[in-house]
Length: 375
Figure 1 (tube, rainbow, N blue to C red):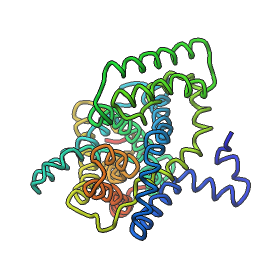
Figure 2: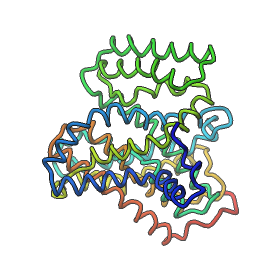
Figure 3: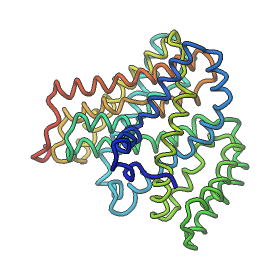
């Protein structure tokens, strides 16, 4: 069993390793290596990306989305932050706005520049990278500030909705409902039966229902990276946690491979869609979050104590870091070629949202621990 990062923190090397893993620095490393490699020796990079694309994107990323689904599942259990509509309403509503805002911005911008053939990329800026957005929020806000859990819940809900968008709007091939049902129904049924009989090993769920689900999605025309999404919620809670404990470190190395395989874009591959994707994330994302939060208050929902609109604007900008999921959506939206490279560059540009969020946070003087309820 791979050691969890917190098991090795007793040494300096262990602390460095934990910092790298907990802050997804392997993903950044993979992306930087890919960018350099693609611009120094493009042919050899293209050969590597082509050879490993399926293994990384269609198999490896199964476990990344499974961990995201695990967070959603735990949050929806009794006592979790999404366990009741009243507790979850505001960040959930903000998540919807955080997807609708950039999607609308993207489609409007595509219409203005007169390139309707790019409309398929509308979902790319809907993404929020949980790891990096959370990291930026921790830099801006002190521990205990309500902006941090608000952003985390928003990002979890955003990614959950993103999984639905990916399945519905970006099928990997011709959709066959018969094949989907023929494998997915038995997969879900088997997972349910295994839970009823007390099966505790997550490997049993991966190799049984998980494998059936992957085959059904692959041959049914949906993206097989979502294979464990319907299986994870059916695992016992301790099994889910054991799954997270075992896979947390390997998934970071999978993300290293993901960055390496997908982020190798020629620096010259900057076009209109690059700027549209980046602007949709940096501008459209916070605009949608702020607008829906305001609407939520009008219809009776409440902000958390101490969560003022300065903080909401700042966390909304931090949520504009799309990176991992935005790259994934880009590869689903466009075939290999110049348009895909330009769209990927826009996803990479979304890192600029971190700089903007930190700057705006300081300008608005957010970050003090809350003392009073929001009014």
